[in-house]
Length: 287
Image 1 (cartoon, rainbow, N blue to C red):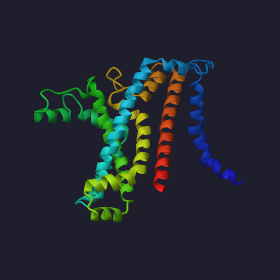
Image 2: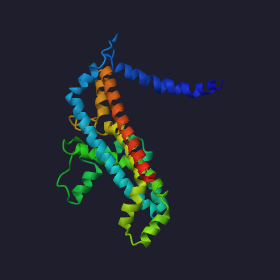
Image 3: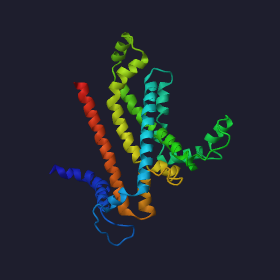
Image 4: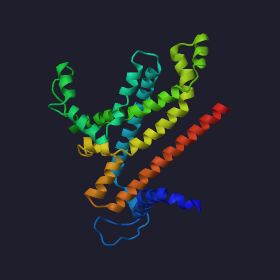
């Protein structure tokens, strides 16, 4: 009888999450297009099309570069920031608040802010670089085939840095200070303490944050869409942007659903690999 009490909570989850997910999986195995009156079950036809779709594999390669670069940048810089915020430096409390500001801004607003910063004629970045003599003339950062992806990656790292820093800082604060003091008494330098004490103990946290960042970055849409809409000429078209275009620009709902399912499977495999790595790390530490 007590199961009835869960219905008000479970109903919105089923209606708004589970049912659309199942519907999307089903559509991925059909030939449904936007506005069509009927659909036919074609089994793995969309996935066969995907395997030979050069545009999909191009977006997948771009997404892989974006995901790996942004995730690595967030982890490395986040760890550095976390170490600084964990040190007893003046203004520590204010710095911990300031590092959260990018996290509090919605993705679309972040994209609009950075579009203004990157603006070729009136943007702050070009104005500063030209004024100090680094550039002779302004660069169209988001419209350049060479610079569009690196420029978007910088924004991605800036966006993901706050949450990674906070989680890594929390992990650092769980490490007993006695271990660092013992290492210091044994003659270990700061670098040696970081390498042999801090990083090994932080590895489970780093792996967890890396897995989450990988999932979020590979699934990115709003930020990059606001910045470039996948341009110029697809140089920043991530997999989710490609799926969006297939669904809402060309009306290929079934193919877009298959693309979404493939992305979910990739993210799921990455999560399983992370869980396995953490389990092996914990088993090794316990032994």
